[in-house]
Image (cartoon, rainbow, N blue to C red):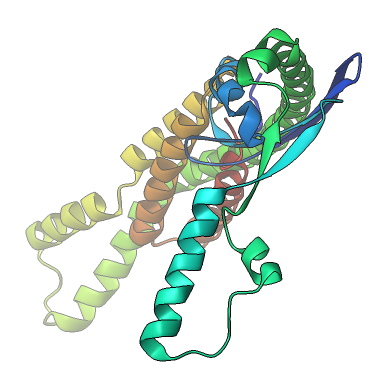
Length: 294
């Protein structure tokens, strides 16, 4: 089963007066781009959270938001060193530039670093109070929701991609059926063109054979058709294989597009051109969908 990179999950875990809420969102990205948001006092848990996510998710932009509410009282303290530095700096500016205004208390309290929160417990206390396990539990539960959604999205993607793939396969088969006739059409057109340019005595059979051989080689799209069909088979096989195939699918689609372009550039048949354009449109739709496959 292929997996989409779009998913969402939310979970809450609680013990006594400590409540942990985790939200996880994932969207498509070329690589695993993992972002964890934690309050500063719980930053020591970031590596554990990242490891849990990495064990389940291989690719995509993943945003993890962790909120911890505890009954622990918070004290607000004044950073005396910062206050002293601000006051001294203000005094120097006033003396040097003859400013009349002074640094009032309201302005001082709003300056960065003056007021700081002092947790009534240490990080070691948080670690021993069950917070890490609550966070890990909530992350795992939220991640289950993300993984479930990604699988459901992936199944829907797979079904839609198979539909477009069969469309391309049908176009390739039609082009393969029409291909032999294109050489004959080119031969007739060449004969008509040469008959208009050569003297009335007629066409030189040897020259005509040479020109037809060159033209046949230019119009031959059998190799392109074979490669296109091979890419289609490989693509279908990857859809059945499942895990972490997004980059491979994208590469195969680039190759399909290349073969379709070559067929269109060589084709001298209106119906082949029509089928080739339709195949390219279906390939483009597949490329849009493959961007969201893990």
